[in-house]
Image (tube, rainbow, N blue to C red; front, side, top):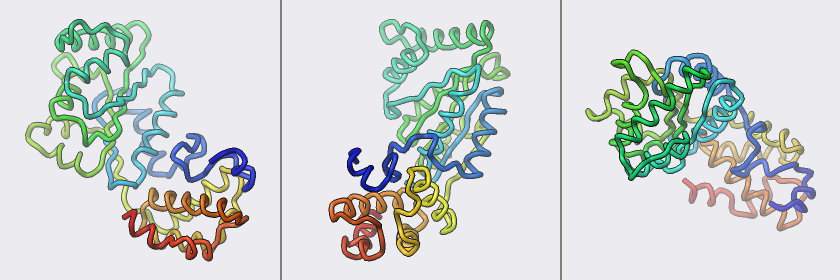
Length: 275
């Protein structure tokens, strides 16, 4: 949404876009508790943490909030894996780039050795601890997940040198129940399960986004109720539908978003298509 349209509605940013400023995202009590547990426990102990839930329940938002908080925490080297479906060779190339080591001729052993050596040196010299964040982790190959496990610890599993936070949908849970990956499942120290949101939680989300964007009165109370009813407890469906209505309102030069606009633009049909 361009600046002219934002000014039309008195908005600092589009409250329903995917790039809402991280400081304006809603931190629920469950997400806040999870982030505190990662900050206070996992990064000291190392090992794995897990964010899981159905598509659209807020896993990526939780990871964004966690990344922002960890980035403000002294003594952490936070890296984000950007290509979760990589093969093992590409995984090591990305890890080498993220943590600043030279990877010679795609040699996995040298990459493994180099990463562990770098982390141990950083910890001894600066007390800096590495943490790896992985979104869409259901796409990570089993061999790569196993390699992450081997990278996390040393001294016969008595000393953890890397923390990994995996965020993925229920396919990740199924994958972790496989015999091959049970050693990872047994190392998950902290968990966040995101489920269907209650109507009151959806109301809080809408109100928060509109307030942060600068126009809490942009939607009528009736429209909020309508959107919440049609979103079925899925936050992503809620904001996608709200975003489409905002675009329609701008096109029709409407000052306020209301139930009439929802009906005129076929909102209910859009929700069914989204599902």
